[in-house]
Length: 364
Ligand code: CA
Image (tube, rainbow, N blue to C red):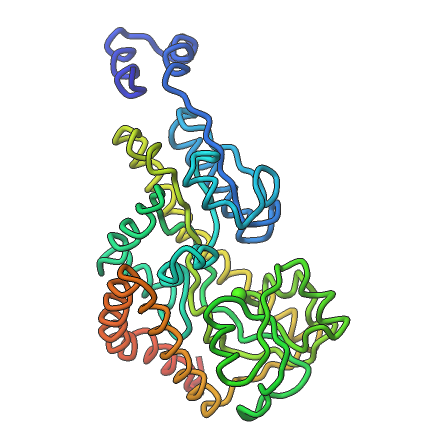
């Protein structure tokens, strides 16, 4: 029996308060499911791990326990980078992670997290919900028996931590920098030696000199890792991840078997967490930036425009090549480029123009 049908019946019968909840238990237990959510994040990792936990808890609460989601941190049930396969095969029911980790299956997955000089958080949500992006994501992930949702965003990431200034393209030559994904490929094109390292290995690698520089996320997460202790300059902005979407992927066989109420709960909880996590990153990045500057004396530096011009050219090439790797990537690239053209024209006159105007030195 559906929960709402039961409650309706209970109301008609005049059953109220404690009596109703006592009677409800056996009826509810028949439709209850316990779902396993695996993640690519360490347990309670700020923003990402805690956001995944909130999502699990909200699905459980919104469904009145009909869908009870138990969260497993990276490595607890499966290794982090096997989360997608676990959900695809049904070993786990859902994952919370970043879909660019699955680019070995199709480069097209990059477009649903972030691509260099691609969409901001607001823009990718516009593309996903109103620009055909979600349908393309469903087509891509559906091929692997996964139904995907946007379920978090980091906002614009920072450019990274360096021990020398970046004044020209030459300063990237031979620089050993931690930057994963398409962003790392862009830096290799301009002469840097970009490498991929999991979060927990970055600090020791910087300390030993195995790498010269690193990106991670933004002030909040970077302060937690302590990069300010061993590097001098904190560069902005991060061209490589302008608004990284975190994904919740659900086993599609399970999803197709959900009733409409269960589907609405999972979709609604994902959309709520998408907004809540972005808000949390923005709020906590502002406070952490203040600490880095004023308590730890970190020197902020802007990546010079001529350097961004060269990085932008290389980004365009790398993104197009990624979009030409298979048939579905091609379709996704075309949709991305078309939407990017239109939204950039509008963002220039709206968010961007307003933010610039607000920085004029008027008294306020
Ligand atoms: Ca990053």
